[in-house]
Figure 1 (cartoon, rainbow, N blue to C red):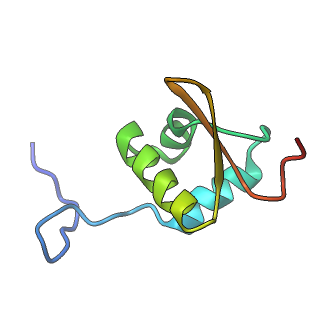
Figure 2 (cartoon, helix red, strand yellow; figure 1 turned 135 degrees about the vertical axis):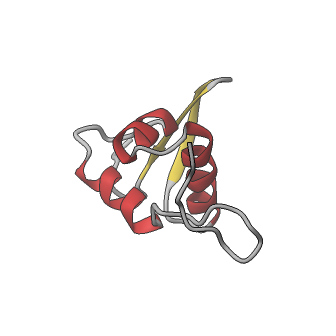
Figure 3 (tube, rainbow, N blue to C red; figure 1 turned 180 degrees about the horizontal axis):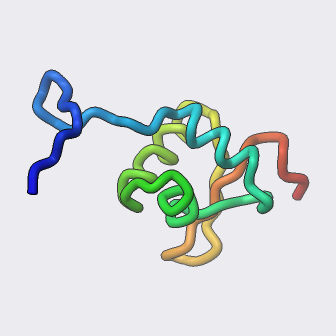
Length: 83
């Protein structure tokens, strides 16, 4: 089986899902907050990739996060979830 995905200049697989794809999926979600697993399932990407991308969006101030437990992190769009 071959993998026909594009690779970037360092030989890594190029990202096919954009930040805008992630943010749009979150905006269109029926839930006020989502998990990395939810993002992965909706966008058909690997869960570790979804988590990494959400962390990057968090560092850039695009999403907020909270820990429900040591293993459960939720993500939401700033200003869109009234606490």
